[in-house]
Length: 199
Image (spheres, rainbow, N blue to C red):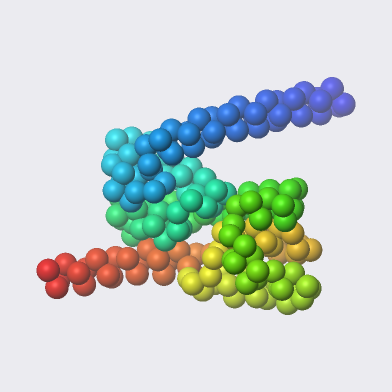
């Protein structure tokens, strides 16, 4: 039994290393191609991958949550434009939920020093007071995730340095995050139709 556990750990460690290396390679290529900074280039990039485009897009969404280079609304908009409102929502949801869970555990491991490197001091100062309010942060976090106006990626990192229960955090992300994504996805479709009518 112990040998099996050791073998499983080795396989998991190797998989983690390989996955990390592949993700780094993809991230480097994406930066060079300006995929994360241009909506048009991201759309062109995805169009070139055919049936693999949804998987690539989900990976992009995971990465943009972990390393917040662009506003989430931009990449969510690309999802709607490329895949349509329904599947765009699904791919946005899967990628963002996975990314949000990953950042929570990253923050749990590396703490505030990492958050201070990733985010501006003004943003941290605006929300840091919530860390001293105990259970109140959980309620604030749930409301913030529900509304499409809060800096979700940052708040997910910040949640990782609180004592919020892991299961409660995941439940908030899984069950409340869809409302924000729906607001972005279908809001963009509505705005696009209005602009077309005006044109």
